[in-house]
Image (cartoon, rainbow, N blue to C red; front, side, top):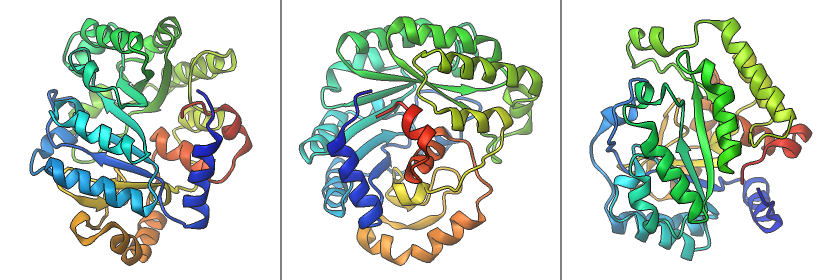
Amino acid sequence: MAFSPVLASKALWQLRVRKRPFVLSHGINARCNLKCKFCEYWKEEGAEMETGEILSLLDEARSFGIGAYNAWTAEPLLRKDLPEILKHAHDLGMMTSLITNGKLLKKRIPDLSDLDYLSVSLDGIKTFQEIRGFEFDCVLDGIMEAKEAGHNILLNCVISGKNLDEIRNLIYLARDLGVWISFEPIHEFGGISGRVWEELGIRDRSAYRRAVDQIIGLKKSKFPIINSLTYLAMVKNLKPDFRCHASDIVLHVTADGRIENCRVARTHLGDVSDGILNVWRSSKDLRKRASEECGGCLFFGYVESSLLYEFKPEVLKHYEWV
């Protein structure tokens, strides 16, 4: 991806000098059009912020120093007001990104003109329908249309016990489509049945390590894999060996306006109605304690951004996204 010195300097000023997060990660709604067995978020359907409330949130976030807006969970493309929200973020000078399961992508491409980065979940080819619950050709058509429309696209692949034999093919698919691909191991959330993890969890460690070795080898061969080698080494060993700075970098806001420390621990810091600055100031000790007590995870966004925050040379050189 093209490196932006202006964006980097703004992020450094916000993170290192003002000591505030640079990214707003917004659970833009509480609804989903899928029911993936390994996901908790679609089960939490409830209250959602209205359009005006979200626009006000963006105004306040920009005043706070936020420079990037990421819309995700449960499925952003279900919001009819998405174009208005993305345009408002763009007009405020924010970089915009979105994570989607891709089912509605082809239909909603005309509504994404104010989107800078598009991430699409793609965990398999032959196994895709079994994992995600709809046809592979549907998401592929959407990706190809988005590519034709000029979008910067990242395929997000969650490595599970189902797709170890398809990792190489997914990387070749990304290359052939002219898009990027990322990998992270499946996270076994405690609120989901153990039967699901017996089916989807990483149980054959030898096969899993061979699959990750394929990723590392193809990364070294210049295939379009965004992950750093430092991160991929952690993934191979399933060992989070880093200091997490997620809550320093990302401001997490849920669909109903709660502010949380991260998507895993989900410690409630306050509410949007309390004011972002007030919550940030009053939650300093709580954020520190939550970070110290965290057992760690391998969500690539948290790991890679934390390593970048610490200026790790290999990550600065080889992490490719944004």
